[in-house]
Length: 132
Image (cartoon, rainbow, N blue to C red; front, side, top):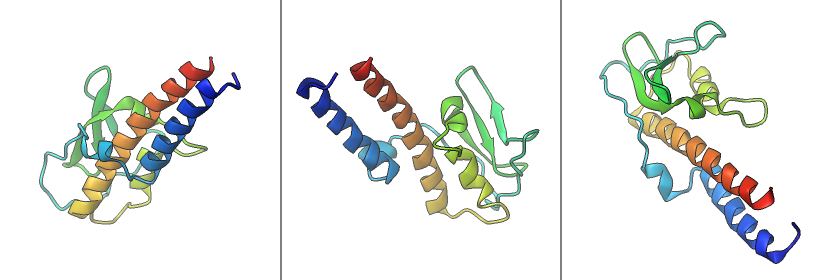
């Protein structure tokens, strides 16, 4: 550790993480999550300890329900549970919009958040592999 052979790759990874967290990355257009059901787009599902709004559909992904009929499909459990500081961004973003109607741009933004969290998870492993 401490060599330029480690430093410069870390600089590159840090720049990529910065772009992701500013939601300024072409990778965010490559989301696997979908929003398949039409409706009023109103966030009425409360995110509580007993009803988080996430329904696992297989070992890796699930649905994030915004109300009783609409959801984001194909959301990785890793993204849903991901912590940054004391927050879980995929959950907090929806909690902050409780009672609001999501626009088309809001829906795309949430899908970008999911993609950013997944890429952050992947890049963190790259950082770890350089350091340990």
